[in-house]
Image 1 (cartoon, one colour):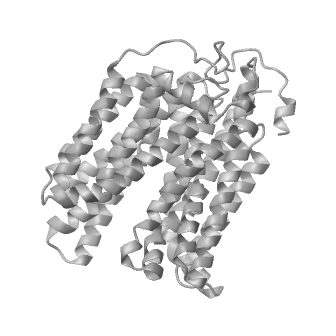
Image 2 (cartoon, helix red, strand yellow):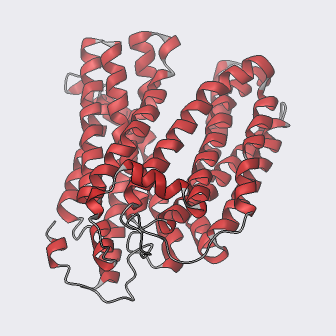
Length: 438
């Protein structure tokens, strides 16, 4: 089997399904708060995005367990299936006007986000060491294409839903259900051979990798300084980004002195530039991570996050400086996410890789949820500049970790002997015919 050809085919498939799922995820999130406000009131509108984040974080470990036992294809399909069910529950909640059902649906909808996040790991199971970060970054970037297209499709989906007899704002979630279904079917049919199972076949281990548990993933991460740095990079970058970004619209509202229409326009511009910083340059970030090294780029990302907090915190009434700060915030997040995810993946054995990645995404989601919840309290008590100062302070432990020398050599397997950190096509290739059928 030509492993290079398998990797190219895997990347093309993941890229296409990420664009599609990006549309499905964003088209729902775009109207989630509005739908929650109409059913439960303005006070609960923020719970829409919170439940999506919580749902995605809660699913990370179960999905990684499925991947450990059955491969990436089964795990991604299962995540999209949960997202599909969640989308349908949201549609049902709009029909019966039930807030509890709506919130449960939003949590299930998070399955689409969980799948989008886990897909970045599938992109590097068979990648060569010198191209891992950029191939992971390309899949992150693909989600952006769907996210950019989604807002332009929201009105069309809503109109189509109304024509089919659905209540207003139900149509976008019906469209999300269709997008998740198509992505799941494409992955189920075409993600063969499975990249994770193929990587295992290329680096055979003495034990059964399907028996790896979440506890094994925990031990693999926290017993390995390199893996700890990777997980910390992802979690801290997400914590800082969510904490500052979530309160920026409130800061604009308090500082601008403009009417609602102007505030919304300013918020739209600032957050759009922020999203550009998060995703648009991810291929470049991946290339730099491969050229400069993961550890060096984590330090660069941490520095950019601190600069972002300083610029945003001291922006005052200046929309221009606030926009620059939010752009840097997105760029710093991109660097810590891409470099940290790649470093984690190549620093643990292939037998516990999925479990370790699931743990990382769970911690990332928990960090983001905590930051989003606490940021409002900080702004209420002390103001936006203090929030940005605290966010910058949270980067300090990450810098301390990244400055420490890391051990070199191949990643250890959970079974004890040293194993390859990814499938290396340079080694002897076993008969993978059975894998291609799974």
